[in-house]
Length: 134
Image (cartoon, rainbow, N blue to C red; front, side, top):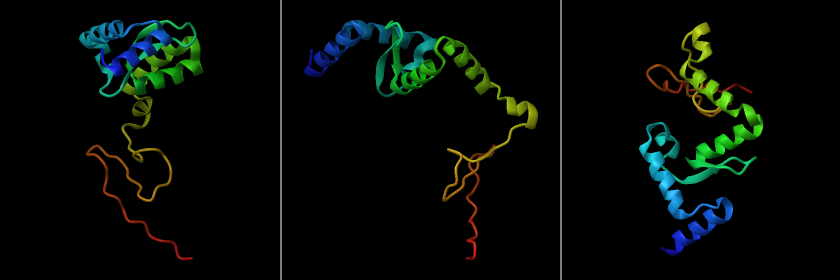
């Protein structure tokens, strides 16, 4: 075992009471189960656990794990319901039923030097803004 692997094993044992070998077994299992493969992501991964009970659940991409933690801390027991409803919201946005597909600014909604709006074909060309006379 390399020095880095020993350090990871020690951290896993200290915080989660899981060995590096067990971690790798969980990772291999998740990699082979289709409904979990996206949750592993492509970058850094980490062992996920329930912050209330300490129960080890599996391995997630660090960004997904962070987002899950935010939702769980805010909504506690209703997190599974919230996440299922969020999936439905993304798959069938309610605004489509009322106003159809409409495109606004790309990125965070705030004033920017270059306001770029979306469209069916992708980003629209940036229009040059007229400067206001003093």
